[in-house]
Amino acid sequence: MPMNGHDPRVLIIEDEQQMRRFLRTSLLAHGYLPIEASTGAQGVAYASSSNVEIVLLDMGLPDLEGPEVVRQLREWTDAPVIVLSARNGEKDKISAFDAGANDYLTKPFSVAELLARMRAARRNVVPQARDKAASIFSAGHLKIDVDAGVVFVNDQELHLTPIEYKLLLVLAENVGRVMTHQQLLKGVWGTRYTSRTQYLHVYMGHLRAKIDNDPNRPKLLVTEPGVGYRLRATEPS
Image 1 (tube, rainbow, N blue to C red):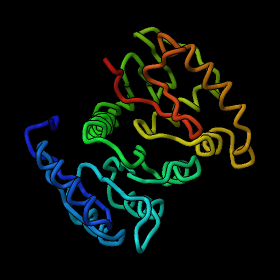
Image 2 (image 1 turned 45 degrees about the vertical axis):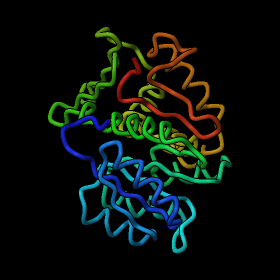
Image 3 (image 1 turned 135 degrees about the vertical axis):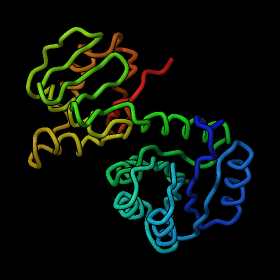
Image 4 (image 1 turned 90 degrees about the vertical axis):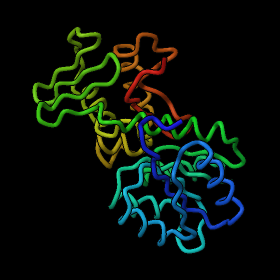
């Protein structure tokens, strides 16, 4: 069920009529208010004029490819975007996440899985993370005082190297969103290092060892296999 007292508005951008009907019926039955668009341009127009709380986006639309729709959506909304696609290749996933998608669900999928992904996506964008006035970021047992450049885990000050801190900050600035290997490498090391994924794996291992209570089963710094990493806004129970 939705996490608040009103019916959240869900924008469905899907050209296949049967799939739109399936999504509409499923969402209405679980307390969501669907808004439907059959083209990418129409979906972007709805996003610019409606207060949508989540977007379900088909990857292959008649007018625009999914990543381009995501890029245009990001000009109007920070609402989570979940890509729904029959394409299951890493390149397709990477292009979607690079454009700014929050999650990627491969067709066919069950209603239960879709609803679970939607709940997770919405949890990750609740106004938990950043107190802009105080420049404090918090997620679970992690806290970052951005102005002071200090990180705390379980209220204990944590020592990070400059690279570790910069990597953590990039993830925190995009909390809840999968950041691809290239996005992180570019953001931390610069454009000349976007192919040096071994750097990223090493430093992510260091961060997990310092931040997650069990780095072998991380609750905050999680992996999207073959794609990148995500910093969760809340720890799963």
